[in-house]
Image (cartoon, rainbow, N blue to C red):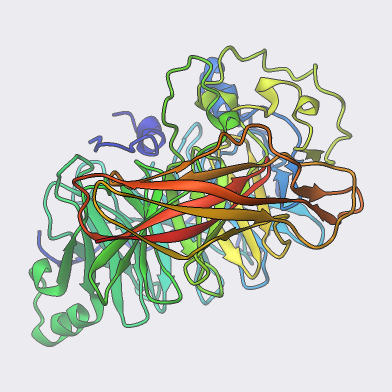
Length: 578
C-alpha cells in the first residue's frame, strides 16, 4: 500500500481489518529540525498549494466545499486560513486554547480565543507532498505538544515557545505500523500502534528509549486506550470479524514496570500482566474508549450506532444506542441505505464524568450522562457531500449561494442559504477528533478544513420525560411506555424548529416502536432572534417494546427522544427481561 494513502484508508476500516513478548527498545534520540531556536516562525511564510497533494478530481472531497463557517445555537465553526490542511488530532491547553495537527501540511496550529485568530507553525522538515493521518495529540506538563504521524511512523514534538519541531520514530513490530492515539499519562507518553498490535511507552526525559507492550492476542489490532486512576490501562484488541478474537484488556502497567525493574528481564510474557474480558458479539470495531466518572469503561463501536458500558464490578456490558442519522447526512439519493448507522468513533470525558464522543456518519458531537441516563447530540452544521449518498453534486463553485460577508458565520437554520447540496445541505464533515475544556467541546472537521466548538452550557430547547425509568418483559413478550417532550419555561421568539420524536434500541433482542404515526410535529421550540428559547409540549407519546423469543434474560436499554435540526435529546429506559 502506498504510504500516501495508508492512513486515509485506515479511517474507512470499520467492519474488518485491512490489513510477542515485552521488550525495551533503544532508538536514536529526538531529531530537531534545522531551525533557529530564537526565531518564532511566521504563520504563513511559505505559500504552498496543499490541495495539489490530491488529484484534481478528489480535491473537493478532501479539501472541503470552501464555504464559510456555519453556526447553530450550540456550535460555532472557524475556517482555517490555509486551504486543504486536513485538521485531525486536537488538544486543548490549560488556558482553553485548542491546538491541532494539520495532516496535509505537517504543521501544528492553534486558535486564540481572545482574538479568534489562527497561528499555523511551518514544519521545515515535512516532506513536500506528504499526506498523513495524525490521530493523537496531547500536551505534556512542560508545555510541549506531542502528536502521532502515520506517514513516517513517528511521534512529533512541538515547542510552542521556539516553534521548533522534533521527530522520533516509533519501534516497528510490523512492516507498516500505525501510531494512532496519544495520551500524556503522568510522566509518560502512551501510544497505541494499531497495526503493530501493541502499546508503546515513552518517557520524554529519556526520549531514546521506548517501552513496548504487545497485545497478548495475535492476529488482532490494538485500538483506543484509557488509563484509569489505579495505574491500569484499558484498551481493546480485536480482529473486526463476526465471532473473532475481540477483547477488552486491563493491563497492569505499574506491576509490569516493577517486575521489569526488579528482575532485569527484558522479555516478560504479556499474558502475566493482563486481564482479558471477551467482548460480546454485538461489538465488532471498538475504536474509542473512555472511563466515566462512576468508573464504567465505555467503548465506541464504529460498526454500529451504539456505545457500550462495561461494569468492572459485575462484568456486564450494557448497550446504549444513539439517535439515527438525519437524512441530510447520508442523502440516500439511490435509496440503497435501509438502516443508516451513526458510527461512534472516539471518546473522552468531561469534568463531571460524562461521556463525550463523535458519531462519524451522524455528523454529531454527543454527550451522554450515565447518571441522568440522558444523551444530547449536537449536529455539526458543515457537510461535505462527497462522502455519502448525496446524489449528483453540483459544480464545486458555490456562486449559487449568497455573499456571506467574508468570515461571518452562516446560519445552519436556512440550508438554502448555503448554496445547495455541494454547499453543506448533505454529507458529513468527517469529525475525527475532539477534546473537552470546561463546558466547551472543541473538534476538527477533516474534510471541511475547519475547527468547531460546542458550548454545552447552552440548555437544549426541549427535554424528554419517560413515564418510567424501568419496565419488565419476558421473551416473546411486550410492554409499553410513554414519554413527554417538554420545552423550557420561556415562550418567546418567532423562529420555529420542527422536531421528531423517536424510539430506538440497538439490541438484536429488544425493539422499540412508537405506536402512533406522529407525522408532522407541532413546533416544540427553538431560539428566537433575541436568543431566548420558546416552548410547546408533546405528551404521552406511546411506545411498544417487544422482546424476541430467543432473548437472553438480562438488562437492556431503549432510547426515547426527540430530534431537531440542530440537536437531539433522549433518555434511556431500562428494560429488564426475565
